[in-house]
Length: 481
Image (cartoon, rainbow, N blue to C red; front, side, top):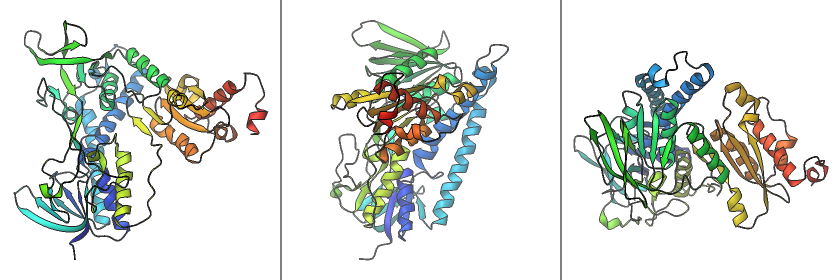
């Protein structure tokens, strides 16, 4: 049977974009359906990854300037800089990225159509445009990459003016002096440190009793110390009871309770940012006859090749419900394309790096020290503190740790955990050594630029070797292994 296309992709985020680009390299005909009438790239370019990181970079520049040169009048950054300027910086980046995405699609002859796509049967998509006109397209394969959206809070409502989500906060017209963040995930801590760098007083209300539980214990302890230094308040196991306006004091008030306590707490603020759980963008996305399997939150069940229970329908990105990121979604979309067209495409390594683009950044890959010991591996750790790095001294970025987790017997690198500026870039050197199944001797035997942040690997490696052999003992035996 002849189809209009080899693959139709619903959504132009990182998974959809990657699948489209890879499919064209296989000389396949591709149609991309995007519901946003104005922009391509989905949350990746317009609401999440790129805009929040652009705002973070602007805030980081301001903090660095303030740290190095200060202010003779003792003013906070929000008294010297306007949100309008930060948003202009963000918009310029988004416009450029949208142009690049559009250029890549045109260059690779990928057809695009604007409208809401719905899967009618396993080979047919019906697209409804902004004028309510319906058009059908057919394809041998379909990729669902429609992403996810924030869940609505239970005890208060978002008005996107004073009570915001991660999308509407990017439309603020001023830098708030106080901000209450409801939630404790990665996005919460990114925005907490971004606005703290701009002088905003931050309060985090977390329903959980733990803080980013996947972090290495020492990295988490360093994070808590840094948050305290920034005067960021965190209330664990809190439940928001009410969000309202105090007309007398001309401010917002958040009323909350802590687990096990009867009394209520009130936090005054200018804005509330709600960043809690997400839901899959799958509502009414396909006909009931298809019976594509999902979990209770609507996230699509897939196999290791991102194939649904309907063999020619695939799903990738946030819509599959994994602890995802733009970086992982790019890989998922490419792998789905390889599977569709029976082309070689190895699954990514089980060791996938994560990054939190807070100020400072946090990144890691592989086993934590605690996890390694839990599964019975004899490990040693090596540490490098940013305060001992010349490059960090030069840039006045002295907060941070790079930690190596390695086998004691053969020095094989098992994990890298970093908190500090440039962590998201630094982690990839450790990732490469782990992928080669190599040891920390690499960092001792090879020249690493000085001054650089990469020098932290050399310092941490020597620190680790010192722990394996008592300080002062020559390294000859262990380096000859």
